[in-house]
Length: 466
Ligand code: HEC
Ligand code: HEC
Ligand code: HEC
Ligand code: HEC
Image 1 (cartoon, rainbow, N blue to C red):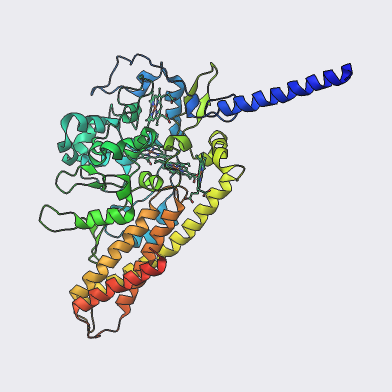
Image 2 (spheres, rainbow, N blue to C red; image 1 turned 90 degrees about the vertical axis):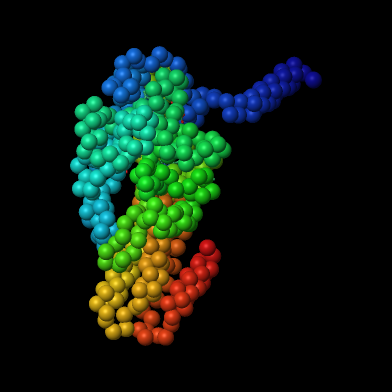
């Protein structure tokens, strides 16, 4: 071997060993942050700072008082003011006015906007709000009032509580998600007491706190019949499905001894209906990301400020508008164009939603006509029992449609669930329409009619594979 060959071999050996060391350290470093890739929540430094002494009249610490300790976080929270636009859903989807007839949402139903508008929007809404319970998801000062005075606060008049809290009250603020513990490394605390009643033990601890935090409000809820307390209609993730929630409402025993909860009775159809709210928490927890990501992972950017501190921006953004958040999708989705992926899902969900919504409105009008004919004692009109059977089918159709419609991600959180809800609604619409169009005078007894209704529904659902 001449000198050249030896030098060559040494160089080769060094290169091979070098590559091996690099590969190995790469493997060993898995899960530990290297300097490449987008910033994630794991890069955030959690510092403990002394809480400000200054508190509001009710003992909550206001955002302004935290600003000295957490300037970026406080300012980014206030940037939710930039999300100001409201889409008028009643104008966009006119069939809603018919479906929601008799309920506040038929008067006004605009899209949600940023957290900095909650007090303004709840005060100005054209929807009636007799009781203070409407303030549940708008201000930490109401949550604090419930914490200190108990559930009796919910039935106080809206105006009385508004007078008490509005001049000093904040929009959704630090206290909502952290209590007064934000200085304690940003510890999250549930301040909405009903969450701790509905979800306990494993049912709560199995959910990421950064998801529960949003789940204090971005949920399906109802007001309990006696106390008008805000409450979630389930006790764990398994019972968060729209089917299970419907069963929960159907089985609820009311103070007057009757069975079956409803938000309102619709005059023209006589149906006892449910109004779904914004079930983001449920829809997301039943979806594909539940075990890996929190709401914060997709809606709060991780940012690096000038002095090198890494923090969560508290401006709640669409991941599609954020290069930083989109960069985190790559880990699992590779080079898929995520904006396109999401928009495709949303387009197909909203297209189907419109179709089913229009069919639902047509079903509602047909039921209202049948109801009217019966009230007028018209020849061939349906009997009260028959109408009751159809009203039940309508209640269910409206529920499944609404569960999809009012979820704010339009399928992005869980397209399978969105389509399932629309299919379940459409199956009921078909059955209901068929029942209504049966020849008058068919010699069916009320029981036979109800039986036929449930058999048809069973068949329709079997066809759907549901
Ligand atoms: C105290 C209740 C509450 C909590 C907690 C809460 N939200 Fe909200 N959120 C609301 C309300 C109410 C609105 C609508 C405000 C309006 O339109 O006036 C809203 C609006 C939003 C919007 C804007 C929606 C749009 O269409 O532009 C986003 C995004 C959002 N929230 C995400 C989150 C995330 C993520 C979390 C958890 C980190 C969270 N929210 C926690 C009550 C809450
Ligand atoms: C995997 C990422 C991901 C997770 C996790 C996630 N979301 Fe979303 N969310 C999205 C996408 C994508 C949209 C659609 C955004 C758009 O249309 O611009 C969206 C839309 C929303 C909207 C409507 C407002 C808007 O910006 O369009 C709200 C409110 C919302 N999400 C709340 C939540 C809540 C609450 C959680 C947790 C329970 C959560 N999200 C979890 C990705 C996510
Ligand atoms: C709507 C709920 C919400 C509000 C309002 C809110 N936070 Fe947070 N905050 C969170 C969540 C969720 C996280 C943790 C995100 C994670 O770890 O995934 C967090 C994290 C933090 C952290 C830990 C450091 C970091 O950047 O993650 C601090 C400190 C903090 N928040 C302070 C504040 C202060 C101060 C305010 C008021 C100006 C505030 N937060 C308002 C939900 C909220
Ligand atoms: C921890 C891994 C992981 C990360 C990170 C992740 N996803 Fe996913 N996502 C999945 C898996 C697994 C699926 C199911 C398979 C599929 O549809 O690609 C999925 C599906 C989806 C779907 C389809 C959901 C449905 O119900 O149809 C959307 C939309 C989506 N992801 C958006 C995002 C966005 C936006 C981000 C980044 C903000 C992101 N994901 C980050 C794992 C991840």
